[in-house]
Amino acid sequence: MQNAVIKHFPRAKVRYKFINRGNTNFPENFASELRKIVQEMQNLKLSEEEKTFLTQKCPYFDPAYIDFLSGYRYDPGELGIIQKNNEVEISIEGYWYRTILWEVPLMAIISELYFKLTNAKPFKTEAIEEIVRKKASSYKMLGVKVADFGTRRRFSHENHDRVVNNLKSYGGKSFVGTSNVYFAYKYDVPAIGTHAHEWFMFHATKYGFKQANKIALENWVKTYRGDLGIALSDTFTTDVFFKTFDTKFAKLFDGVRHDSGDAVEFADKTIIHYNKLKINPLTKTIVFSDGLNPSEVERISKECRNKVQMSFGIGTNFTNDVGVKPLNMVIKISAAKPEGQKWIDAVKLSDAKGKNTGTKKAVNLCKTVFEIND
Image (cartoon, rainbow, N blue to C red; front, side):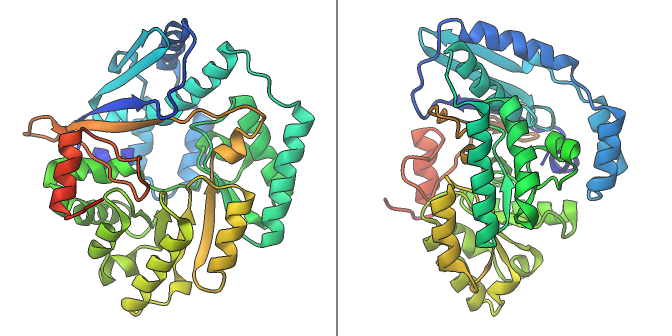
């Protein structure tokens, strides 16, 4: 997404907001410790070996973008971190092409720091490895493709490393890669993932809700010319998305990603949509990525087998199944300032109730535009 932002919206600014969905009580010194770690991030830089990896394994990135990454440095001044008793407020503001890289590592840090400061007691290493091995073996027996999508809410970097190592060792052809590019580099597995809700959310602030999905998809195609071809469907609900996902897009994109609402219901809608467009669903892929665990993957795979291609992006259940309660949190765009425009509230409407983001006024406006009643 950063590459696409640089090419299409180099002057756009955004604001992000940390949303503590689980109402976690943070320890009193959490914000100060978090600020210390954030300050250290300004020293991070791409190594020559990592640059070579990106050049060889991610050919959809042009040399200019990889050179940009070599010079990129995190700017802690883009963050605001405030603590009031047990509540932590985190905001991010700046040029979109810069601030877009904060979300994933910042959430990973928040999660690991919380468990460290609260002296969480995970299972022993041997038990954790056995859990991962059993999952890898079960997915292998099911004959499904699984990828690690678990950076943001992992228990720790160390545990994440352990998980990817075991998935590679015991998952066989079932394990198709990780969205964590560092571990893709370390273990020589594919770096795999999709664009996120913010891509569509920003387009809504610049072009309006009605045009957001269409122009966001067009700009993605302009950037990658058929590569990275999984479209995220639920930023303004799946029903709204499919009204835009016409024959052109349905043929251009390899498939769609499910991220909220019942997975099997989504699959049924998707299959019906492809059939309506006279496209064989078995030539397309659904990437399932919402709240997955072995039983849910088995349920979905049984319902969808021989109807559509499937892949599963598994997050927290891979990287934080260690005997503690994972944090329920997100970081979302709260507002954007496209070039030549004022700050405009950003909105996400989910297929699952209670997961909408944005001000009440902006959410209601979005629902009105799309004639959504709930």
